[in-house]
Length: 134
Image (cartoon, rainbow, N blue to C red; front, side):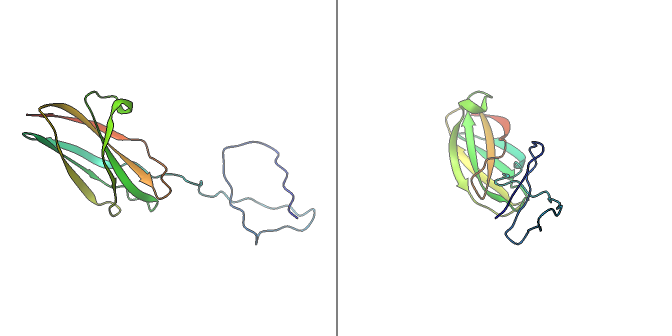
Protein backbone atom coordinates (compact mmCIF):
# COMPACT_ATOMS: atom_id res chain seq x y z
CA UNK A 1 0.00 0.00 0.00
CA UNK A 2 1.02 3.60 -0.52
CA UNK A 3 0.34 6.36 1.95
CA UNK A 4 0.65 10.00 1.00
CA UNK A 5 0.27 12.95 3.29
CA UNK A 6 -0.24 16.36 1.71
CA UNK A 7 0.79 19.21 3.93
CA UNK A 8 0.08 22.10 1.60
CA UNK A 9 -1.62 22.75 -1.68
CA UNK A 10 0.26 23.93 -4.73
CA UNK A 11 -0.05 23.86 -8.49
CA UNK A 12 3.26 21.99 -8.81
CA UNK A 13 3.13 18.52 -10.31
CA UNK A 14 5.37 15.70 -9.15
CA UNK A 15 6.40 12.51 -10.87
CA UNK A 16 5.76 9.20 -9.13
CA UNK A 17 6.49 5.72 -10.40
CA UNK A 18 5.80 2.30 -8.93
CA UNK A 19 9.56 1.87 -8.40
CA UNK A 20 9.62 4.74 -5.92
CA UNK A 21 8.86 3.68 -2.37
CA UNK A 22 9.85 4.46 1.18
CA UNK A 23 10.15 2.35 4.25
CA UNK A 24 7.72 3.24 7.07
CA UNK A 25 8.76 6.52 8.75
CA UNK A 26 11.34 7.19 6.01
CA UNK A 27 11.31 10.70 4.58
CA UNK A 28 11.39 11.09 0.81
CA UNK A 29 11.74 13.88 -1.70
CA UNK A 30 9.40 14.60 -4.59
CA UNK A 31 10.96 15.63 -7.88
CA UNK A 32 9.07 18.18 -10.03
CA UNK A 33 7.73 16.67 -13.24
CA UNK A 34 6.54 18.08 -16.53
CA UNK A 35 2.82 18.87 -16.43
CA UNK A 36 0.53 16.37 -18.09
CA UNK A 37 -0.80 17.78 -21.37
CA UNK A 38 1.47 20.80 -21.01
CA UNK A 39 0.60 22.00 -24.49
CA UNK A 40 3.17 23.56 -26.73
CA UNK A 41 4.43 27.03 -27.39
CA UNK A 42 2.72 29.07 -30.05
CA UNK A 43 3.92 29.48 -33.61
CA UNK A 44 6.27 32.35 -34.53
CA UNK A 45 7.01 34.58 -37.51
CA UNK A 46 3.34 34.81 -38.54
CA UNK A 47 2.87 36.83 -41.74
CA UNK A 48 0.18 37.50 -44.29
CA UNK A 49 0.83 38.50 -47.91
CA UNK A 50 -2.41 39.72 -49.49
CA UNK A 51 -2.86 39.60 -53.24
CA UNK A 52 -5.72 39.82 -55.71
CA UNK A 53 -8.35 37.34 -54.56
CA UNK A 54 -6.16 35.58 -51.99
CA UNK A 55 -3.86 35.88 -49.01
CA UNK A 56 -0.79 33.75 -48.28
CA UNK A 57 -0.45 33.02 -44.57
CA UNK A 58 2.94 31.76 -43.35
CA UNK A 59 4.39 30.86 -39.94
CA UNK A 60 7.14 28.88 -38.24
CA UNK A 61 6.13 25.83 -36.20
CA UNK A 62 7.17 25.64 -32.54
CA UNK A 63 10.38 23.78 -31.74
CA UNK A 64 8.91 22.09 -28.66
CA UNK A 65 9.03 18.28 -28.87
CA UNK A 66 5.37 18.21 -27.80
CA UNK A 67 4.22 20.08 -30.95
CA UNK A 68 1.60 18.13 -32.91
CA UNK A 69 -0.16 20.33 -35.46
CA UNK A 70 -1.55 23.81 -36.23
CA UNK A 71 -4.90 25.24 -37.27
CA UNK A 72 -5.38 28.50 -39.20
CA UNK A 73 -8.24 30.91 -38.43
CA UNK A 74 -9.63 33.93 -40.32
CA UNK A 75 -11.92 36.72 -39.23
CA UNK A 76 -13.22 40.05 -40.44
CA UNK A 77 -12.48 41.63 -37.04
CA UNK A 78 -9.44 41.40 -34.79
CA UNK A 79 -11.34 39.27 -32.24
CA UNK A 80 -10.10 35.68 -32.21
CA UNK A 81 -13.30 34.24 -30.72
CA UNK A 82 -15.22 35.55 -33.76
CA UNK A 83 -12.81 33.91 -36.24
CA UNK A 84 -13.47 30.71 -38.18
CA UNK A 85 -11.05 27.83 -38.67
CA UNK A 86 -10.10 27.73 -42.35
CA UNK A 87 -7.31 25.13 -42.40
CA UNK A 88 -5.97 22.32 -40.27
CA UNK A 89 -4.87 20.23 -38.78
CA UNK A 90 -1.59 21.03 -40.54
CA UNK A 91 1.24 18.74 -39.48
CA UNK A 92 4.86 19.70 -40.03
CA UNK A 93 8.31 19.43 -38.59
CA UNK A 94 9.61 21.24 -35.52
CA UNK A 95 10.63 24.77 -36.52
CA UNK A 96 9.42 24.23 -40.09
CA UNK A 97 7.98 27.17 -42.04
CA UNK A 98 4.42 26.41 -43.19
CA UNK A 99 2.18 28.31 -45.60
CA UNK A 100 -1.37 28.21 -46.88
CA UNK A 101 -3.07 30.29 -49.55
CA UNK A 102 -6.56 31.45 -48.65
CA UNK A 103 -8.84 32.38 -51.59
CA UNK A 104 -11.24 35.14 -50.51
CA UNK A 105 -13.22 38.08 -51.85
CA UNK A 106 -11.79 41.58 -51.64
CA UNK A 107 -11.70 42.95 -48.09
CA UNK A 108 -9.71 43.19 -44.88
CA UNK A 109 -9.01 39.90 -43.12
CA UNK A 110 -7.36 38.95 -39.84
CA UNK A 111 -5.47 35.66 -39.44
CA UNK A 112 -4.33 33.60 -36.46
CA UNK A 113 -2.50 30.29 -36.20
CA UNK A 114 -2.95 28.09 -33.16
CA UNK A 115 -0.50 25.30 -32.34
CA UNK A 116 -1.62 22.14 -30.53
CA UNK A 117 0.46 19.56 -28.74
CA UNK A 118 0.42 15.83 -29.44
CA UNK A 119 -2.48 15.44 -27.00
CA UNK A 120 -4.56 18.15 -28.69
CA UNK A 121 -3.93 20.77 -25.98
CA UNK A 122 -3.91 24.22 -27.62
CA UNK A 123 -1.35 26.95 -27.17
CA UNK A 124 -2.52 30.54 -27.15
CA UNK A 125 -3.35 31.69 -30.67
CA UNK A 126 -0.67 33.68 -32.46
CA UNK A 127 -1.95 36.78 -34.22
CA UNK A 128 -3.77 38.54 -35.49
CA UNK A 129 -1.99 39.65 -38.61
CA UNK A 130 -4.11 41.45 -41.14
CA UNK A 131 -4.12 42.01 -44.86
CA UNK A 132 -6.25 43.82 -47.41
CA UNK A 133 -7.14 41.52 -50.29
CA UNK A 134 -7.99 43.26 -53.55
